[in-house]
Length: 507
Image 1 (cartoon, rainbow, N blue to C red):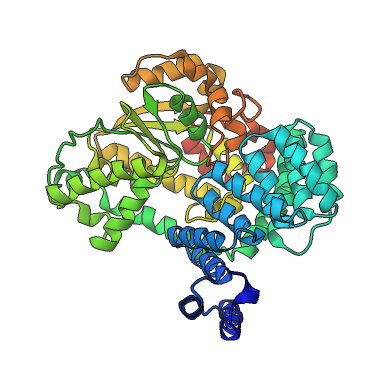
Image 2: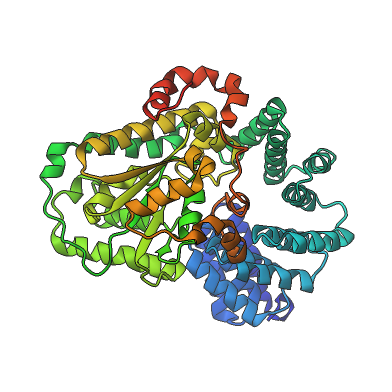
């Protein structure tokens, strides 16, 4: 049912809901959309716009069901299909998202968001030839599109045409939309890095990150949230406190998981995909099972982590079951012999992980601290609690040091079974390094792990920002990259020196 077929009162209410959203009156807008649907239950536009509102306030499941209904009622609305694709991507359903974006483009070839999202979806699935073909088609309809200019540069980069990509971006005309400008400057920064020009790379990355800080209103208060959590955990964990815990019941339904973690940009995604290509291992991407459990504990028990000490056996068993159920539901885990849970910033919650699974094994991936920090600054992360720190070098350095101090404290007071994997060793000698990891996990060697990049390209649905990198063969261009940027990192070297030495590197 399209807008021209609903009654005048419902049409007025749709306009009213838009004004309520613009003025920040979200609950009132939700209620207004519900009133429209009560009077006009087949109003596709109301379902579509209410779905968008739900999505924007974080209610993704409800949002997707409402958008499904909108499409059911009006299968000729390109806007609905485009937003449907965006929602599917948030669930890492990249193949389904591609289909929705294609439908949007089929309905309206001149719809810029539909075209740009469709080409991006193809590139995201590592379908580079198809992305190039669709880009050329889209350009015929939208020759001046800034969105397509940015995507064209990304495709040129994937094709190895770095200088052409720079030319495309630098002659582009970007409107005031800060997201387009951020993406353009970020891509220029990455391209200049690949071309061996660190000064131009940093100039563009600085502009991108400053725009991010202003656009998302990132300040000391917003950065403090994750630092306060680290502080609370540092204050709580000691050998004496851990020894006072009530016993954790042994989990007999499933072999304990192996937790793969690190600071950001330390090689966890690379190692995760290598391990996932082994037939006896399932290593899904960044399923937030532990963060969801922590969120539940905070709501139901409160005072985390102090309250975990005296937990009775039954609630612990229920959380253990919930952990594995989250993995089953998110990526269809079928209970393979070994589950590897890769979550790079899990360091903060290792104490809670140990409370649930005291017999678990841990793989700690590490890299030269300066490369971790530089690579985090060069990456375009979504602004979540931890990644808010990645838009300033001094903030990344501070977060890195806080994380590493917390990890050192966990090692002192918890009996953890840990295997350490050095990123540079994966790059220099992948076979020996991975054999060591498999031995630690009590998993037999399988040569398929050396062809992980083929498996990634075939699978396509890589959910992390490293999707384009892990589909390549192992490369060495990022190894010790920080040395080319030494002058930008020099102000932080004194603080980083103890961590550099502790991990066996030199400054």
